[in-house]
Image 1: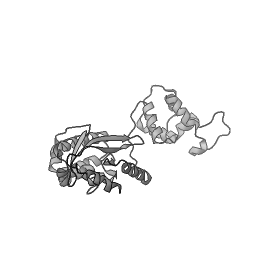
Image 2: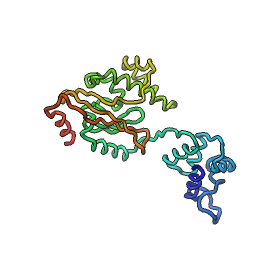
Image 3: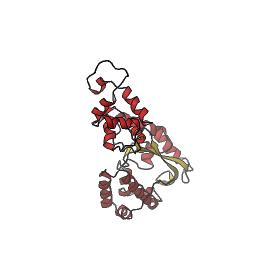
Image 4: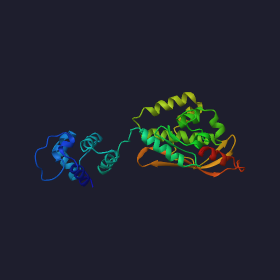
Length: 268
């Protein structure tokens, strides 16, 4: 519950930890409510009511101020928002080089499945060799959506290109609505509309789709027609990132082992 969480976060901090002068010996460990209120810029009475679980209105700005005062990490900050009865704002921090290296190792271990990780804009942050050689992810443009609509080879690669195009645009519109204050989505839509008449037509229809295609056919120049089951997996430690996994189902055009040759080359 909210009061227990806030008390536990207060108890782990000392005045010195947050830049306050120590006022001598204390009967209980941690910060006092009045000290948290000062650090967060709210009245002591209001903070006490919050910690007591009273029915008071709490804004995102105040919750952020309390999060900063209590030195909460991102996971704790999200938990505070949910305990206060509101949805946490999306995290916007970029993945660190160490995190990107870890994601790259993960997707490489997923062979023989093409796999890649995208951010909120569908920029490919980590890709394995089969994602590049079969799906073309990150080859000509690091952004999957831009490459799909702008790269002429994508229509040769995907036999069901039109169906995929409709679904991708619908998903992109849903994704943009999740981040109404992020102008990058509008800029991407304008760029895509200028570069791809088909995107502009689909974007103007305002259709929405909140799920990916479950199976995807891919035509490879040497391995033939490949069929994959497509899974989109969220990453608990990085909510904005998604793992795109293509599990091989059928290789109707590569019975002579040409797909296996691609896998062997990718693992080499």
